[in-house]
Image 1 (cartoon, rainbow, N blue to C red):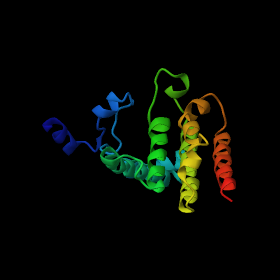
Image 2: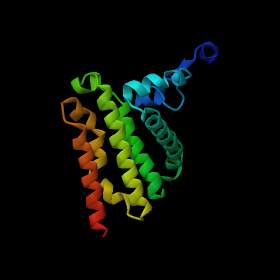
Image 3: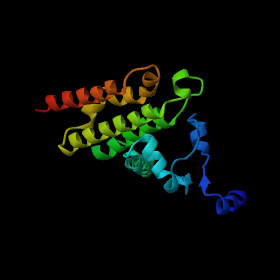
Image 4: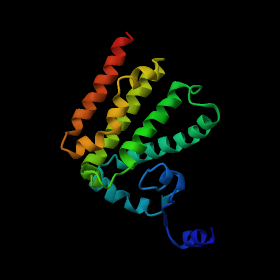
Length: 188
């Protein structure tokens, strides 16, 4: 559309509203793959000071997973998810946790209206820890299904509500470690 194109020439930030996200009741309905900010590099020192030195790496990894998921979802629409190998199913499962458990907000829920930066960073670390541990299991030919059956992906998808109520982030890191350990033990 001409107005958007003209605005993009002068503005260094663009939030792409996505109709499909709005129809799916995913709010805010901002497409993370199409949106951008050219101010990000200017803000890196502030992010590292206020969120931690690993913020840029965490953000890069999450954005990579979300981008990879969007490509995989095109394949899933054509042939279904059953045909995908477990490492690609893991990307889809992890990105789903990020989308629903981290990016999607419910302004009517007390805990989801505002989340402290400390808890947001803890959520990123916990979800990526699950991804890393699950990726290790999958690389050893342990079926992803065994880990999903523990319910850990669903627990992390609802983690923001429990963190907002005061549960410590360490509780969820422990839950991830326990789920992974139980799968490892059952495959020894």
